[in-house]
Length: 187
Ligand SMILES: [Zn+2]
Ligand SMILES: [Zn+2]
Image 1 (tube, protein in one colour):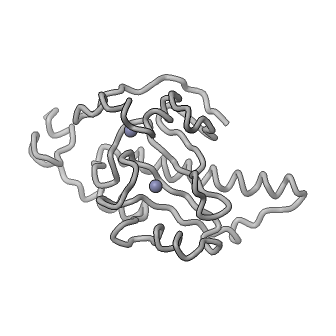
Image 2 (cartoon, protein in one colour):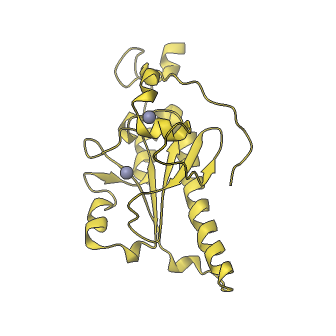
């Protein structure tokens, strides 16, 4: 399920971490240079999707930006559109999969029966230092440990709404300060 554009984004990020793409597993997957995982179920010019290797429920995908962003805390107001797209793509992938599986069995899917959990790890509680949105359904099928790992708005896992709220408050700080976004430096 590939949607058009093959154009690659710049491989350097504002903090100069572009040189680490060799070292980052998710960058290698995104760049399709990894032997570990080649099962990309969706890709476009800024997002790639693949299944979680340890699914917490029947449908469990990672929605990954091509840009190497370390974690949700590193996002700035310049990423609001990307953050919206991660959620949109994630919702659509899972809904499409559920519908396709039902259609294959000659059944009609009722998406209400597949509640979803969406969220990001919150530092320092992440294992892969490349931003990824988890989309899991049905959430009521998750075991105790998975419910703990992916507990929305815990200290270690936050919802897209929380992140969006935080970004919308991301005021433009003076150029050069740690969290300043690029636009401040363009002024
Ligand atoms: Zn990366
Ligand atoms: Zn994860």
